[in-house]
Image (cartoon, rainbow, N blue to C red):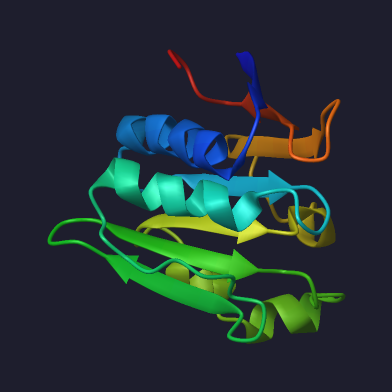
Length: 143
């Protein structure tokens, strides 16, 4: 099922993320697509909140992966911006995190052939104004 949302601002993007976060069971892979400044990290902040994880979410650009936890949930937030080869991906430890929590990857364009068919795919694009975003969500029911 495809769901398309318009977000007018960062707060709205975060709210959409919260809505998706409430639906997660705990072992999903979420692939985020979109350029710089599209709101991917803001969306992840909402995902965490929706999952009941209280965290200071930031972009994992330099760390490659950030881990956010609550008592019973884990979200692994990857940045694949600098991943350009199979060796790069392997060195991130990405495969070690599989089936251990929710995995969210920013810049999923760079690892497209590794994203499983059953992953949730979320595509961010510009809307009609500088702050508006179109967020297309594939693979989640009942939003």
